[in-house]
Image 1 (cartoon, one colour):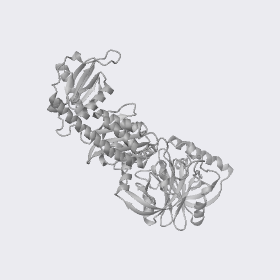
Image 2 (cartoon, helix red, strand yellow):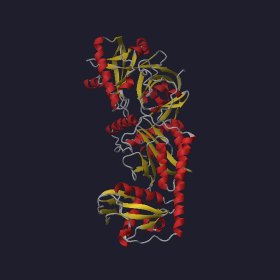
Image 3 (cartoon, helix red, strand yellow):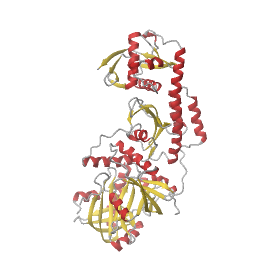
Image 4 (cartoon, chains in turn orange, yellow):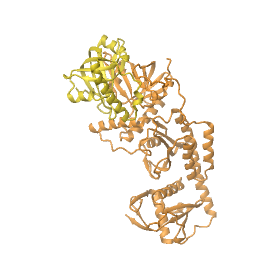
Length: 468
Length: 152
């Protein structure tokens, strides 16, 4: 083989559909489109077995196949003669292909319907360039390509730069922001978000993001839904290229499923970018515990390479430890400082500084819906669950007693907040609350005063109402 | 065999490929630039770029077994037509406009899903060889439950 499978790396991203040709034992050819051809090693590829049953029956009778793939970088079509070696229903190749399909399926409400039944492993007997679908003049044919100048480089120097930023962070907020800024400025991953487990089981909540018009802080994802939810569920990284085409394919399956009586739920909106073409989800794990999920997106069709996934997976382990250490450190130091510091003072309501937001701040109607544990501000959703209970406690104390300063310790000791006794993640919840307020109601703000102590500023006043 | 609705679909300007097999039961294939369904619905003509037609045509002359698969971006609606080879000829100039028209409509569809026209500028779509075959069966090829079911 003069052209190698390695040199055709772009063909394995699923950006352009491949076609599979087989033949039954009685001599009838068959053709089918394939969602994905996956690279296995220098002599093997894997084809996804989902729906093409006639192809599968033919292969069982006659293991010879032809697959045609198109290089999205050059438009050159390559014809690969194949022979089935085995089918895998477990193992790294199967899992990689299955997770990708599962993530796409979940966006269309097709999880469990649109799934990988097996990864069929084929030996590649020959590779030939097609004579009609040929590369553009000047396009590189098959030879190994250098990464484009826009691609990130996971050099030791780059990793060291990120590490320095992380070490300079003094609190969780700075740490998360420095991670996202580092990914952007060092690796040019400019759209990224970090989600952490929410108080409610099997839910992740966005705690930090970068590169989006809306921060999305507070946005929730259920475990098992979308790339983030599937990453959290499988605790394995997922890389998707050509997401638009994959979504169209999944949509076609969903439409057919509806027509045939299966009723997948409505499509779950994609997080972040309105039309991402590439997504990379990385679980942040410490000793098997899920600390969070890092999701990076791009509008480029082939932004994340296999080697990026490996590097970011390693990076994810490092980030997970850094995040967990910071959470533990913040909790320990705030508790220690709290015990030596004076209790939070009761100060008059008027003592709090008022942020300069131009015109005089308006009075806000803040409503706590007790049954759902949701706080609404001026009729709009702000936050729910533990951060909602915390905000309600703070505003109530502010209105009733005129308090403007609070400590993390008193929140921890307040049984009405129902914080978990172990790993309460209070600092994460306060950060989430602070950012939601910045985004949705800047007239109410939480300002750190010292470690474990913060001030509540309310500009313009609030009217508090509870609803059952 | 092919009703008016299905015939119109096939001639919309789709992604189309033709498959054959040799005497060792190894498949061969080529891209199809355009198809025309004859008025009787029993015969289809596939226009295959001549630069790529040789192995397919050799197979068809030897054993006659042919399959043509098509899909429509962006909704992925697709079908497969199976049949037996009847005859082939060098596509005539008066057939060129049909080929060009379908091919350009297909490129419009590709552009709509993010593949720019420039990406296919290098593909050799003319001259073509016209391959006429008699339809034996048609199968649904839209992905999802029901894919592979006979529709004609």
